[in-house]
Length: 513
Image (cartoon, rainbow, N blue to C red):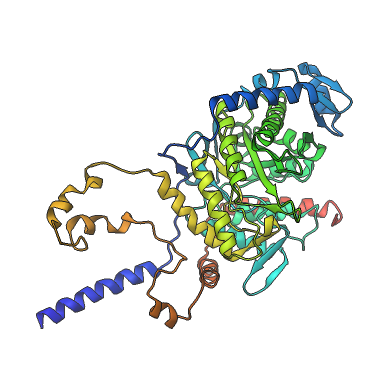
């Protein structure tokens, strides 16, 4: 009887632990702080060659600042050679201008416990950005709507390992082009309390972003602190268009961070060689960061590198390739030499479904991000079909796997507890560690555990419906959305934001172009 009683007690404890695991907890992990060495693919000689050649490009070939007389005037006044829209920058000038950019900065969230530091040894994870389509098991592939957008923002808020709410997590095509940025910003500001990105699709929309942040944070706070990090893409090769530069000008003037990011498909928009691509990337970033410092010395910026290769048979971009990782590693070294925060990588894949191809390609890039010193990873979760699709299932699959990066970044402890000598003495030859004191004290935190993947025996898996990972992820999406609770917010501030959006929308007619 006593033995039976003990068996029931153990069973009750197991049931309690299973119930605890089944209860959804809303947690938010701090941004990653690496305690591991970085992988460096370039030798010192290779770095010096790339840096020299990048300066040669700026001096001899130059870059174009198109339809932007203000930018041309700034460059001319700074001492560059301006011929039409072509700007040739004397050797050393861009690098000198970059010295006023901070090596790291804090982006503030409306909930101060969600603030993130970008730079140094940190890694901040942000979700997918930009797709016009969404995909889920119920609705398949379809154009994104504002309802989809809000669901992604909620999922981002509920995702423990995701530090940042992002920006255009999908493009809500049911809202007019000239007004959707207002709804997107409002969703980030009210449905989440994590940091977010501003609009860059027109300088006026960047100004709207700043004004909405002034309502949320206060005007003085915005001018003295960074509350947005926004994506400024360079039209590679070597072209800076007036829309992106106009947004950059607005953000730099207002002390808001910008990712200066070449957008390169190797073999089409840059040379096919890794060293050649890195040379062009560095030249473009030097020019872009230098321009931001001409606008406002000390404006926070991030060295960006979105680089993929091309399938020479179909012309389609490819992801998770060895060459892309080599470029990421090399760009990270170049960014650290400049003393700038670094953005690259993401959950990138070319697959049409959240399948094995998607998983392989994403895992290759996630690992390169961690080992390559990336400080801000856009597209961390949800990316599908070469960036055309935001996938709900892949969002939670990827967000779950970000937990492995947190664990890896901790490094390997060697303190007294980690040495486990008492446990080894206690168990001795031929024993087992399941019941020893050290295991009982550490088992909850000893091993990272997925919230999505299946570890059950075959028989249990089959009894539960033989669900594959995509099905499990779909169930996780529904569970998170059902459990979502809107974070608290000052009602007066929320009302002011809604009033601003309503007034702005009413002031202009709808436009879908």
